[in-house]
Image (cartoon, rainbow, N blue to C red):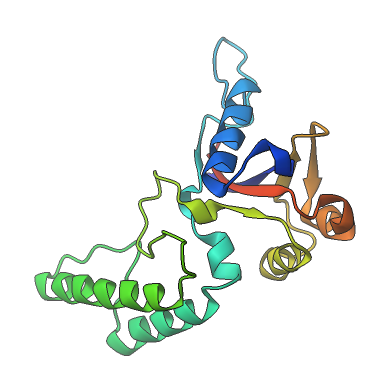
Length: 187
């Protein structure tokens, strides 16, 4: 089963999102997040991917809301699912490819200048929007999407503790400005 997880890093640990993603991955590896060695393996998971199935989540919750609304309408109007679906019918496959190009144009129209991310993602390659500087707005958007009672955890690397989304929001003044990095893990 795949699960969403976040790694939180102090602001000084990375100069940009790509560095934050690399630092978070290094932190998880150095702390045996996916350690399955030996008879009694005890890592949290058997493998993980930075971003993964949740790559683009921070964009979805912030600047890309309108882009997603337009792309959703494109899918509904054409009765074609653009992501996560492969059609056996050649005509539908061709239509899907054409619509994916349109979706990328919509995405590009809303994408902030200087942010080099695409709509149709390879979930095995993280993109720079898989890490953001934490704000109250980001914390509120996560709570709105997943709920206060969600079981999603955030690893606070500075204090070596996992915290909940609710705790994050309740203490946002302590956490604002930190890097928050998306992780997809499997167990």
